[in-house]
Structures are given as C-alpha cells and as structure tokens.
Image 1 (spheres, protein in one colour):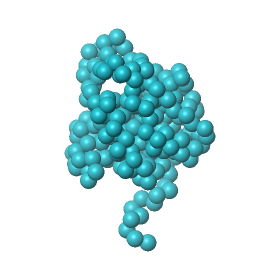
Image 2 (cartoon, protein in one colour):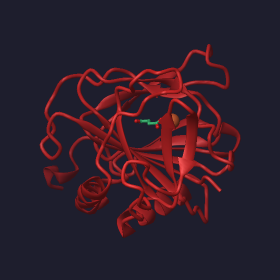
Image 3 (tube, protein in one colour):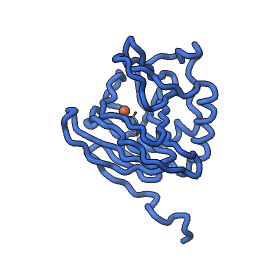
Image 4 (cartoon, helix red, strand yellow):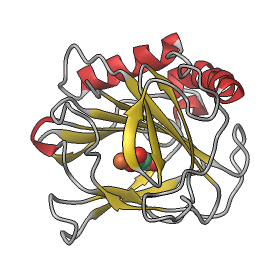
Length: 214
Ligand code: SIN
Ligand code: FE2
C-alpha cells in the first residue's frame, strides 16, 4: 500500500466513554469540501471574538452556520437565528457538513442525527478553551459531533463535575470526536494549541462542533 495510509489507520477508533469516542481521520475524505465550506461561511459571517457575560473577550474566534448560531455577550449565552453582527440568518450548512456529521454520528452509534447548529471555532497557536459543558441546547441527549482541522491539539474530556480530572486526547487534522446520550453533558476543553504550521490551514486550528439545539 502507498504511504497515503501511513500512520493512523483510517478506521481507528478510540473509546472515551460508553457513548463517546474519537473517530480518527474520519473527516479526511471530506477535507476539500469542509475547507471550501469554512471559506464560504466566514465570508458571509466572519470570525469574531465574542465577549462573555463576565466581560472577558474569548481567545477562540467564532462563527456559525445552520439554523441557530451560538452567541455570547454581556447579556449571556444563547442561540440566535440571526448573526447579530449582520442582522442576517447564519449561513446554511454546506452539504458536506451535514453529510459528515450524520455519518460520524451513525458510526458512533447515533442513527438519524439531524443537527441544527454548527459552531466554527478558530484557534491561533497559544489559544485554549477552558473546561465547560455544552448546556445551551434544549436537546441534552443528541450527540455533539466535533471535527478537528489544521494544527493538532490536546482535547480534554472530563466527567460531570468541573473538578473531575479529564483525560487528555491528542487530536489531529481530520479527527472527529462524538459524545452523546449518557455522556452528552461531560466537561471538555482544549489545551493551548502548540505553535506550528499546517499545510492546508497555516498557523491555526479550526474546529466544527455540530449540535442539536431544538
Ligand atoms: C468546543 O467545545 O466547542 C470546541 C472543542 C474543540 O475545539 O475541540
Ligand atoms: Fe464545547
């Protein structure tokens, strides 16, 4: 076999919990379509640094696609159908986004996944995302499908209390993490992204997280 498949086997999977796993390289066949999708989305709804209710500017730059977009400002966290920056609806899901999210969810044991939101996160080297639960969605059972692109990073996957010690999960370009059902409300985060340059994305990591809000 050529060195196309050198390294991690394309079908490798790491179990994180009963209903949580990493699907290594699962997004690689979708790479071109995903990157084109990110370019289209960010042209219509540029990355921005949101402010938390506590008044801190977030390190991670964010935008959204789908019916609902996650927003934060001094008034709180919420999902909104329109981009507050433009007053326009968020860009709709590129076909490849929905296709990948459904396939990854099914592969992880969640058939019939129909997300209605996708948060697009951009991490510059040094950027981290502290431990948190995804708790602004009405649906707390449907999985989160999280796609890593660009620079590698260390994902932290914890328990149901902030103080539970998380496991460290190395994530590379094309890896997909899925957590739902009984594991849907686990704390998770990202350690500071080490410096580096990715051949397709340059000095950044991009993460797509699909959710079912309503
Ligand atoms: C998130 O929790 O929203 C993002 C996780 C990641 O960037 O891998
Ligand atoms: Fe999250």
